[in-house]
Length: 77
Image (tube, rainbow, N blue to C red; front, side, top):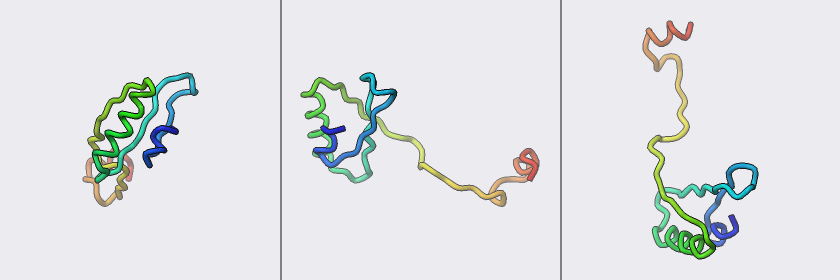
């Protein structure tokens, strides 16, 4: 977390602190040079880095009016 914070990024450790993994979410539009610098710093500290993307838009809200009749009936709405 300290290494990524030095690059203006925010991270979260997983698990109970026994040396598992950390996650750093990257905002859209973040300069690739910032990502590469953070990855290089992490690698030089002995960490492995993997980069992936999230394939969903995030949090959504739905109203009962937006779903079809069969779904409303199944939900008892």
